[in-house]
Length: 307
Image 1 (tube, rainbow, N blue to C red):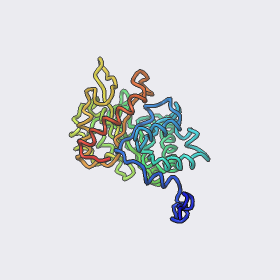
Image 2 (image 1 turned 90 degrees about the vertical axis):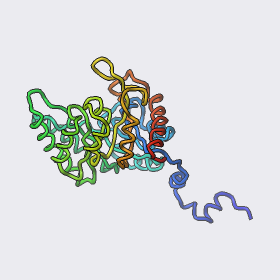
Image 3 (image 1 turned 90 degrees about the horizontal axis):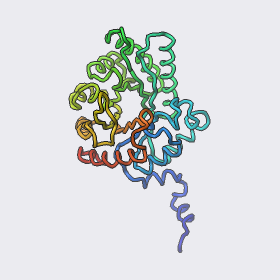
Image 4 (image 1 turned 120 degrees about the horizontal axis):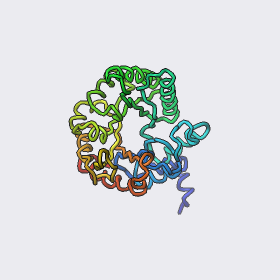
């Protein structure tokens, strides 16, 4: 006797399985790549998800949606819509690698400092509600007239507060190698000074190479045990600055950075931080994102990482 599809599903019990689960079982495997939404500031939330799925990105880093940089204020990430957003991400098999906060820990003025700490706490709370493991923040600057040692002490104290709040929420705060903190020695001092399992490193490998003047292997040797997430991008020197270019066409050893990470046992995502929000003149995400996915697939395969 021939069974129609509905009868077959009922007879086998598959009719009780959610469509999203069946979809997940047949989902194609992808390389562990991610993109930051800093690279697509004009995209709506549905477009971000559609493009991630279409281009083979299993993860996204949230750094603003449709121009709104304060993620707790994004409609899809607040109130009653948060639960449906979590369900939609799960149905598509997309992971949010981390939330990118702008909070920085260098401020000395009490009111300004409290504003930064409050932003950090709000992002940690959102990460907890969204089921996201990491929140990125900054040490950021050495203000004029202050010693590096004094500022590092203040940065450590700020991150100790953030790590304590994160620990109770089951979240890990990441300091990014960024701004005036791109040297391994400074980052190591902050990481050991905070001394918390809820505090680790986001390695922006571009900044430690270009601004910190460090070889990838040297940075990883000192900081590898702290790295939980990455930012990868390429650039070319342009006067006293650098101009971001498509991956593999510039002067940054991105392939070497990938090999160092893979050889060192890094298990996180290889995240493309295309700074379109801050540099509108660089290529559109419709060009840069598929290019990165293709180039990175080659790099990861060569480094022994499988899809």
